[in-house]
Length: 181
Length: 181
DNA sequence: ATCAAAATATAACATTTTATAACAACAGTA
DNA sequence: TACTGTTGTTATAAAATGTTATATTTTGAT
Image (cartoon, each protein chain N blue to C red):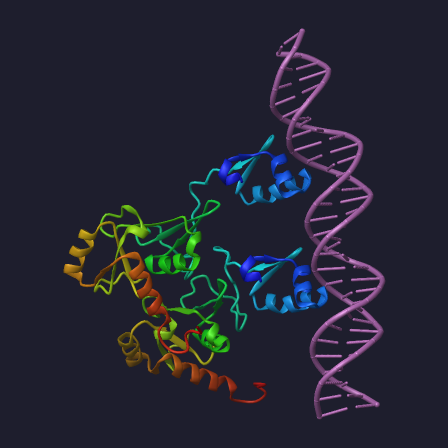
């Protein structure tokens, strides 16, 4: 309904689903927290991207994101939503969390700062160069050649998206009290 | 109404939306604060576009946009909104995302820096000349001839808007777990 | 140019609509 | 039975809208 009309009243939803308005409010709150819709006084509407807002915090670890943002990772989602993480580490984790909802993922070539697609990028882990963002650190490269030359000097392993994702997930689940399933 | 007429009376808006004039005044105040309209005694009119606004970040990938801006792509939207991306790569993606909302799209001829319409431009991809903005790189040309001569020297493929859009979208979705249908 | 009358705008307050919080009722489950 | 989670109900808070009184601007006559 929201997608079709762009804007719907709480009362209409309440009548449509034959539940109380309170229930609609509660359910919409969840959608809102996911960033799918926006509640305005008197109804709900589709969340739209503002073209100038800048998300200042990492969606995943909530660390402030630097302006420069060479390490950042961005997820383009349905309904014009965009999420931004501090680095590929958090980006990959969030990407996996969202799964099929991700329409596109952007990151930057570590050497040239060129914007590239994350799913086709090359990832370097376990390198000696520490950028000090998140652990385990993941660097992104637009082409394999650059990544390999980088590794020649700074050590590390060159991986594809899926491999890097697996490694990061694994590393994050190791240890003690990590993780409910 | 304001966009169509250029100037509208408070009373007309009040009757149109069946609310009191006071409410119209209050709502217009908000639009005025956003700089979209200008209230004059006896009505509202469209606010002249500020001629020097400048968006400093790419709407799509959020990379800073250089002043030079030869690669930039601009989308003219309803209500005098303008979006700006770092290069044709992000421009095309954003353009597709907004769909019918785009009134006009501007880019620049790669050789002469002339401003041209994106929908009638010629696009060159897969060329050997790397500008280092986004991948896959897309260069824009005002006429087919230039584009073809360019390709003769620097390799690549000459495409129309729709073809380029398709290619970019495809390239960005490639890879792993991309995409639900 | 000056002034009064008309039109329009603003401010303060009253009313209505909508949202939130706290609690009670209910169903399902171990 | 005790626990959990969902839904509905009520009271209260917040926001939006309408009403009235007052101020400001425009108009037009002198």
